Image (cartoon, rainbow, N blue to C red; front, side, top):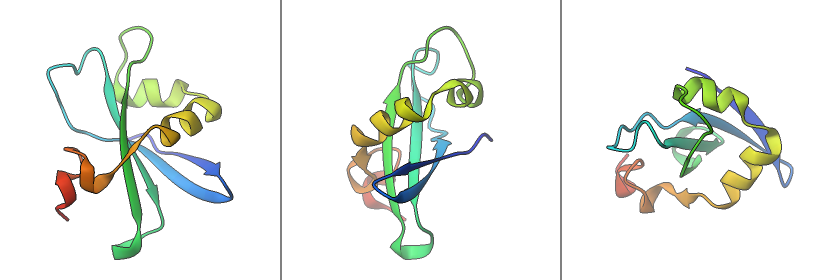
Length: 89
């Protein structure tokens, strides 16, 4: 699985494909943004549409740091997201 890191407001976020499969898996992918570790970590999710037909790993590898920063800014907290189990741990 591809993993990227970005810095936003002096914080280092890890970025992964979310892994959740939807009916739109050919059109869009989910991303997981994670800050920190353990029970205190922050997790956020978003979905995006890559150009062309690529795997989640390949499309994540092609995103620029600026695009990842923009996606983080439009992401939603894990507790509000189906990818995050609506707050389930």
